[in-house]
Amino acid sequence: MDILFSISQNLLNQTDDKFFRYLFDKIDWNQRMIAIKGPRGSGKTTLMLQRIKYGIKPQSNEVLYFSADHYWFYTHNLVETTDSFYQHGGRFLFIDEVHKYPNWSRELKNIYDSYPDLKVVFSSSSALDIYRGESDLSRRVISYELPGMSFREYLNLTHEQNFQSVSLAEIQTSHSQITHEITSKLQPLPAFKEYLRIGYLPIITGSNPETIPVFLQQIINTVVESDLAFIADYNAGTAYKVKKLLGVLAESVPFKPNVSSIARKVETSRDSVYEWLTQLEKAKLLNFLITEGKGVSLLQKPDKVYLENTNLSYALKATPEIGSIRETFLLNQLKNINKEVRLPNSGDFQVDDLVIEVGGKNKDASQVNHLENYLIAADEIEHGFGKKVPLWLFGMMY
Image 1 (cartoon, helix red, strand yellow):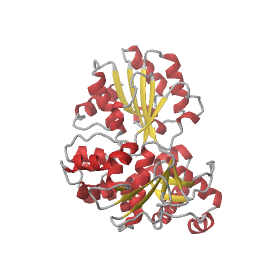
Image 2 (image 1 turned 120 degrees about the vertical axis):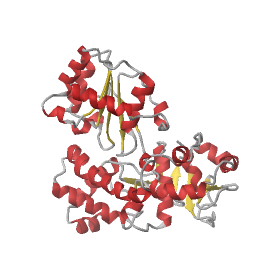
Image 3 (image 1 turned 90 degrees about the horizontal axis):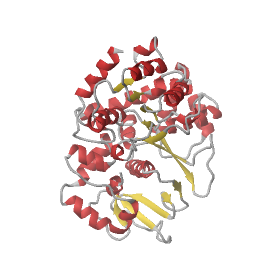
């Protein structure tokens, strides 16, 4: 096990405390078993390493971090590795990319049941349903989701600010006051434009901005060819068709899908399209909208399909349509704060009884002013007035 300890220590030596994702302070680290799910590049590994270095501050033999796809596990299993670690004083175990390990749920269940004073934190792809493995972890593990960065986090990371999050309710009632406080410290619009293009993932620091779209394309390939290969048993032929499906979607999002037409373009069945759409949503490559008042079921055709975030839009299409970018951003930020977002009869999005219409700086309320509770999310403005709110402000909610 020396190799695992050596890698763990090397990674800890390179971990700093300059920036913490918002989720760090929201996790109940006292739980015995914690799952951190999220898209590739969202910072799950760094989050775990920061918890070790700045939260636990353990003796060297008490903590171990490793990735479940390390070659050590070609000839060893999780249970025996954990047992050896525990017998030598180990009490905090951090496992990265658990979805890459066969029988992960059964062995985690055995570890939980066998070592009551051992705390385990593991990360996985967003696509992994940790409660539906072959062993029941529902009563044993507390799960958290780490999405990409909000615009607020992006500003704090790249502009060395310390902006606090605001709620959707605060945006409704106090947006003018909030925007004036923020704009007294920086001009948000140039930064917002950059965020929409390349700022969703923490890789923005230390990277050449021109290479980030290429990196995002590599992430897409890895999610489809590797993560979903483990989770959904994709083979090379399936992975090719799923990427082809994603390419078809990227050309026309947001759109109301014609599944029969998509199936013909991708040369597959309607059932396969439904299944792949669902898996791509779980993997945080797509977002769906369902019409208000309509039930939600598995393998249901969504009423509208979006790419999951605006950075994907720029990675998959050289000049994505600005209206699509605006809607993609707002839907992403609302979903990332766990809001149930529906497609209303009038307007673009509905959250509870609030309808939001998205547009440019000249957008008016003609489509929604017959409604009692609405907002206009307008791009390219620093400050709003009344029910007209700057679009960028919705990026300050987490």
